[in-house]
Every structure is written in structure tokens, then in C-alpha cells.
Image 1: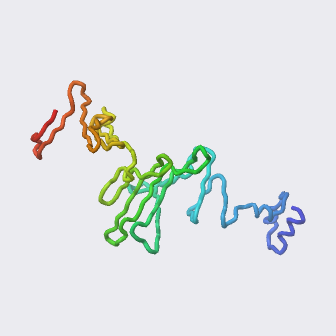
Image 2: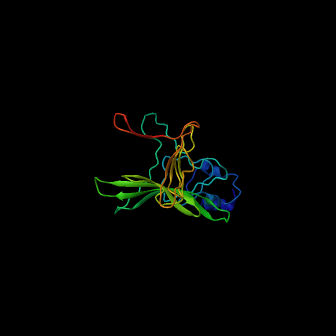
Image 3: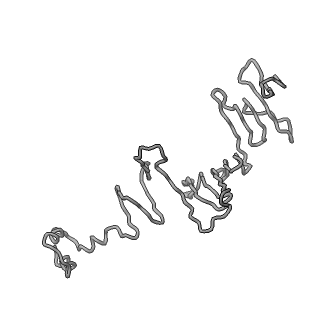
Length: 231
């Protein structure tokens, strides 16, 4: 070791074996120590193993498409695991407080950050014993986030923001088993183009997938007896 390196150890009680650990060091020991991760805000590369990790924030960056974060539970019982807990520990919880928020963010062709999808929760009722919650799914449409699905305590709403979205349910053999046309509000069963009978009218059109017969509207009572049938 150099004289400068030895001077750093001035006043330190150490054995010969301990001092031999610095043998071959070509730069000041203090310089090497300074290069190590500071305790306040460390930066690590490679794999870090720890029993517990806590702090105010963390960023995990990768230059490829490998997994940034993996949570593994080796517990063999039938309970939940692994678990993610998004805890809003408010000292004054109140109705309509927002809770956890997950954003799916990317860039546009103008190098701007854009939230293309979002999932978040809200307290509807914070009253002890009658607590209610809400979950909402948003997506980006024409440059603005729009609420496409809202799950409330007493109802499930699709397109609560009244955007021009078509709603479609596909069966095994029909791409439009149920279809709501966003632009008109018309409803089709078995058709992707329910007939518009003019302004002010909302249409329900039933079309059969069978080319030899038309659609059928049938009303029955509780014992399945036919009350009304239109072919």
C-alpha cells in the first residue's frame, strides 16, 4: 500500500492480517469507500437479496423486456400469495378519497409521456360498518382519458362518460350476439348494424344467424309457457 493509504489507517487498531487486506490497492482506500453505495440513497446493479426493503420510493430500470419486478411466494398452503398491498393510511379518511392508482404510461410520436390506461380505486363511504368502495378503469381515447368501466357498490356501469363506444358481446358462432351501437344507442342481437328508424327512436333488432329463418322474440312466464312470440 502507498504512504497515503497507510495514513488513512493512522490511529486505527488492526492486526497484521487485517492490514494485509489492503495489500495491492492502487488508489486511496477512502476513494474506494466513497465509491460504494451511500446508505441514504443506494444504487445497485445485478441481483440484490434482502429480508426486508423499505423507503419512500424506488425505481427499477431495465434496457430490455425482462421482468422489472417479480414477487414469489413458496408457501404451499391454500391462502393468498404473493400479495400486493396498496395502503392509504390516512389520518382523516373521508368519502370520495382516492386510493391506489395504477397507470400504464408510454410515449407518443412527439416524445411526450402519455397515460394510455389507468386503474384506480376510491372510497365511496368511509362510515364504520357501512364502508363502500369503487374501482374504475380508464383508457386513452382521442387524447383524453375516458372512463370505460366503473364498478360501484350498487351497480356496474359501462361507458359512464357517455363516449361513442360500441359495446359487443361475442358468442361461440356470432361476433355480435349482443351489440349496442355507441353513436345511435340502437341495440342489435345477432347483427352489427341495427336498423335506425329515425331520430328519436331507439331500435332493438333481432337477426338470426340461420339463413333460412328470421329472428325470434319470445316472452314466457315462470313455467316457460309462451306468452308472446314474434317470428
